[in-house]
Image (tube, one colour):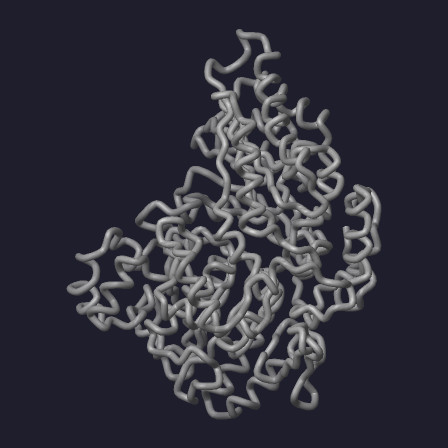
Length: 614
């Protein structure tokens, strides 16, 4: 197999380094009959997948088990995809070039709805039947996890099981079951049933859905006795004890985040109403300063990287952030090790920490006000005032930075035209702060880069009932925004509304969308998240062939009483709390962050999650 790939594939593709494996700290094993052969499948290109923290964690965790060999599989880019189909080269793993169909289990991570067609295309390249019901005993078990698994229904027909929530513990429990199945101790159905008893595992084949005449869900229920009616997410309780890799792989080619990624905490205290991660990963769980520092030291020694990124949903909310930054900068000053904080808030920004981390490598700073007007920031519970924005901008420009990037969204619930116009107003106020700084202190060049995304409602958030803007509404708002930008020092970029519209459909959809995905793959839809490949007309054709109206899912306001496709997934946050937050949004009322005051979301009183809210 290796010789065929080297002769027929590697010389014909743009980046052979995506397909060769053999990186420093990758794992080679001798496969035995009593081992579980696990393929970790990432449905995007190598450079994206190798930057993903979850892949690094589960890959090394599984490989530390003596009876498991985990190998990696990435979606081949369009050039390799064409060659593989032409030469009939099956999808293969990086470590041993083994065809994916020969593995015992294939686990996909679902990070983004627009990667769903890549999943199906990868199964097709592997020679594996797309639908779970069409697979035989000789086929691998196909499973999936990741944030999109919090609404698994659009992919339900294609997956044997889903992991809901955090995977470090449950993946080992599943591996034990899969080994028993491989040894013949359990039938496939028995294995799936026992898997369904594990907290955090959903087996879609054990559930049925019925619908009302208007297309809404009438009932979602188990078909077998003993299968739980609701599936609870899995959560890690102790971040100091949970496994974390300190010998991460070092790629041969540059990847998106080519550095050490050090997780510092999970969850978020903020409660931004649009943010799925802020609700589904509750409660907040910090790693201790001592654990973070120890893991950084071990990772630096094992890789030779010169940059450490402190990863979380809001890095400066980490209580020991300044201490960790000071430690790394002081202990590794001679090695020129830099620290990156990828998630910054304007109301929690520390100029002292920013100055410290920029001593080695000075880059632009990125902030996310999310909405232009202060009223809209209260609607989404962002909690950032104009005073916060101007204070931060003055500090940043006064310390010598010349570039600030600002992220916003349009199409948010309860948005008015004036709120859109305020985006440019905020950018201009930030630019004015640059000119308010004394000439001798400020950078000679200045840019305020504004990026505006199209809002997509997400499951398990207070805005899950909201109708997404139509493509035409997004386009109208984008034209309005562009007409207001006149200053050359302000740059403006906007997201593709056609792509955001499809993301909304699959974020809010049910299992009937499986037909659309099959038709889309037949039409050649892959890498839909990439502008140079995305072809909206192929999706229009797929929806027409499947006889499904995408507006039913994304552009329709839902009532609180409607059964939503993901209602059977229990993330610990009560539905009544989400309703309460949506009602507060209508009045532009804010909710304090979790460290200031408990908002009684339900996570702290749930028997499985309670007792460790910080």
